[in-house]
Length: 154
Length: 196
Image (cartoon, rainbow over all chains, first blue to last red; front, side, top):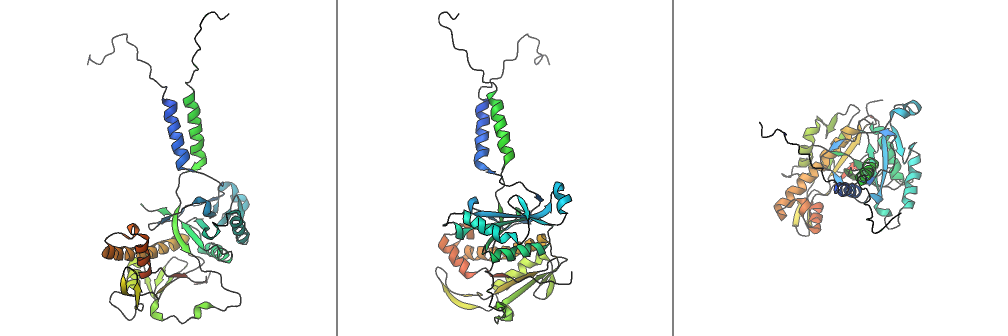
């Protein structure tokens, strides 16, 4: 295999890296456009159930999120391992939902208010009791458009 | 002492890539890519205080398909125990009532734009009731099957009438199909079944 032996004293030419920043910038812009900022830090763990007949949630600005799941390990000691509700950045009770929804609704533009959607991100192990309570609270608050968050089944 | 014409040295730009990398990684961490998907539902408005139970309205028994999920995630559909896999078929049969079966929902003549006069079961109601101990996963699975049943029917109708899938139809066509198969799922007030 003499053909491939590097017997000569030829040096490898240096790779031209002057376009590398441009490449990375392109990647950067791609991610900046396709992704959204994470707004809340999650204090509950959840794994959403799977479904096949899903619809996409449009217009992020119209969507309010409610998270339900087991507290993450660092909060277990304080909150126990029962399913909990998280609104914005803190744990909450069912009774807080009414005020939360009204507050969120007031933050919206008036023209958008009728289109407000509440997305329920609920862990699949959760019992329906707590979900039902949340649903009743949402009804009281007149937040009738809801969306059960789910992942696409492969 | 600078004498004569000295060339301005190039700025060393070899670290620009690193800076861009740092930015990239920062954005990768702080953002999330997930496009949110889910099952869209509409809740009924809250009951009025002075109003008694509205459910006493005399619904014809044949028009109601009752689905119960107990705390062990077992399913009972219209009086028989059933597996989730059979639910879609059963629901389709219930909504469509192809043979005008007297035990399945009543058919009514109605005029729909684009589709003309047709016989539809617009009185049917699917009543879903769950226990407080039902797992959310089982509940969503049932919801998913119900939506799937409607989608199958709507697609079938759109295919035969307009020659394309429901999703690809024009808004007017979709509206007509929706009128033919209106989605009527009712979630009853929560109850406790089978003890704690």
